Length: 441
Image (cartoon, rainbow, N blue to C red; front, side, top):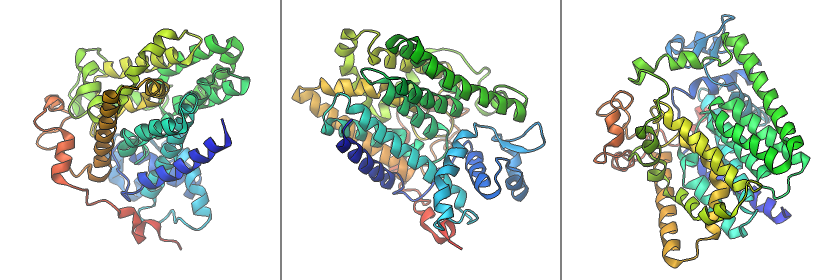
């Protein structure tokens, strides 16, 4: 890795940070709200408890994301790791007098800032992953497709979904994993990245286990043991927190899963079916390929995969992505609730970044290049549409709630992106640029 690459990565981080915040708002959801309040409480009172938040707005106690824990304190139903990360990012601005964390919209600022910083850094990591085999120009194209042509823009960078922290962790792990000859410090970095990903989203266990097996095969059992020990330590810490707070190693997850029948009209949490397998890829309003066809460049890595051995990273990246895809496809709520486009499949993007880089190396025909450029353009337009228009489209609830009327996920006469174009930009744009969000005492 050359010094010039680090300079480009730094500039890329700043550029993506500007792009991700160009809409001037947090694209919030029910699932993300407890985490942003926990981040603010950590800065303001040094606690992750949400008692003060619920005390100020008692109606929040009725939301599934706010859970009354074993010790009588309200907690976020999701991992506290993203809240800690967001608070860490916001702390210098607060201490420097640039952010008033008691301002009315401060939690939204903390959420948007934390998510966008982690997403921008992730895009820079993908650029560095690309530089393993691509020219600087090729690596920038890879990063552009990743950071601008996917849900990294319209979803991951916009609020604290847990994806922003877990995807950053996976990208960090991939940077270490794709090194031709791994050293012991690569095993440490890989372990830290996987631990961060797993402690943020335990759903990533399949991909994490595959990558851990990969480092043992590629670099030897000692390196594998280093990474596995770090991941195990992170998992043990998370399990301990879950048991203390919720009395269950899985935390509040069982409570959330119990709501599926009433909220999502499904009778079980997991069932592998062609609907989920196809929906994650080609649903008109949730398919990864529908919203981000630029990921198809990974198909051109086929020859590299055939030529590779299990000592190379590519096969392990594909295996990890496939394992994660199968888990999400078997999840009954594969469409991920009220969101814009695909959400769960965004977790596999860092895993397939090395495959996309290998694919870019092998695209030489003018016709294929033209198609790739068109796919990139479409992907960026669709992602930007979500960043500036969602949820003004009201597609998730109008005319019927998609969580209970699943046939809408396959309605090509009313795709979500077209609805966004018809309804236009969200009136919430630029709300975080107002005085009430950033006022300094």
